[in-house]
Amino acid sequence: MITLKDVHFSYANNIEALKGISLTINDGDFIAIMGQNGAGKTTFIKHFNGLLKPSSGTVHVNGVETTKTSVAMLARNIGFVFQNPDNQLFSETVEDEIAFALKNFGFDKETIEKRVTWALDFLSLTQYRKTSPFLLSGGERKRVALASVLAWDPETLVLDEPTIGQDHEQKEKLRQFIMQLQAKKKTVVMVTHDVEFVSECNPRVILIRDGKIVADGIAKDILTNSKLLKESSIVLPQIAQIFTKLSPLGLPADIIDLDEAETVILSKAKKEA
Amino acid sequence: MSVFDGLKFRKVSSPIHNLDPRIKFIYVIAIFISAILFHQILPLAILLLIQLPFVFLARVQKQWIRSLRGAAFLATFIFIINILTKFFYNNWTLTALDIETAIGMTMRFIVLVESFSVFFLTTSPDYLGLALEQSRMPYEFSFAFTTAVRFVPVLAEEAQTIMDAQKARGLELEKGNILKRIRNYIPILIPLIVSAIRRSLELAEAMESRAWGAAKKRTNLYLLKLHKGDCILISVTALILLVTIYVRLFLFSSIPLMNELISRLI
Image (tube, each protein chain N blue to C red):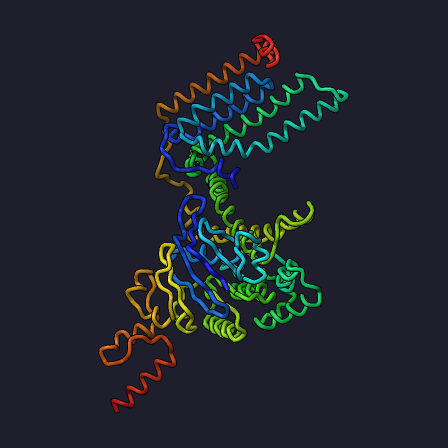
């Protein structure tokens, strides 16, 4: 469980990036953090594993205050996958890259071997086990970065812009993979601009603007509120746009899910017929 | 990164910022030469004091002090090495003169660092490139130089992100003995180098697609012209050089040592 109480944060150049954020993330939550560029999303999530410490206010992870422990200790529970995989890849083989964190955390040899094999398999990277990560494509590098974090099986996974540079198939795989983690009762927090992806995943959505939380609720409520989204430079998902336009015909406007849309249209069509 | 901050240009308008970078560079070189010609404390102290009006006119005191603080580590190192070598060389004895020479050497280093600090703090990389270009340097060279200068803060920021990313994977930079600590930096350095190379290739492609090197002769939006301030600075520089050479040639042996000065005062 992560608890933030009135967190303020200013960078060295006195720019206040967070202006009083209070939030509780429960175990097993699936949260999408959205907001325009420069709203403070990345600054916000960097508080979860102590990479940034609040200028005032407190952040507790499982009851431990982040100022009273090290990033390495917090990282054991909070897996953080950075936006750009090139910021972390350095090993000669994909296998070594994934084993890096496991060695840092002091796992024994057998466990490392087992976890690496599992992570490679989980993200369909087994064929690249002995390949240099630098020879892989952008999407594959991103998966290696993800695998290198998943390998130590953290309770909470924080993903910064996971869908950037991924084709549709990879995004779908990522979605299924998040669902699998959810089934295992893991907490997943992702920062994203991708409304379509969020509407497909249907998480709890937290909207940040100018260092403050302006909305916090289920995806269906927030992604259909055009006024709220417009203020954060976000457009409605395409399904919601169509249903907003069709609402004069007596169809509900607050629909973001493809299956739900189908059901609603079919029942309407049946009634008309 | 505080050392870099002492060299990083910030856009301010001041009489010093508006000076021609070529003249400023000649001035820095003059100070450089003067500092190398002396090893006594008195002339080096004067050379250090000469910087102060520039610093105040340019209103960069804060950053200048920061660069001083950044240089303090190396300065201490130079001082200690000087003292130790003198100490061992003279059969475990140390005279007041030895200490003075050590202080002098340290001050020479500080004078060099500080004059360059003033130069970089008050000269924008663009102006620097312009100055190189108008000194008939091939554009390829001046461009490479300005790009290198401009990318220093970008790389520093990138290094910070990489450090964060590796810390998030349980890397503890401060852990272990010296060898282990050095090895801890491998996961930081490799991504930094790889991304710098990748970035430079991308930059090259982007530049070529914007017609880099299409015309033999490039035109410039801005031209450097000498103003009144530049003439004053060049006169000041000439004066410093003349005085330096005169003192060095004719008065060098009669420059008083600090311990003499102090004993005379007492």
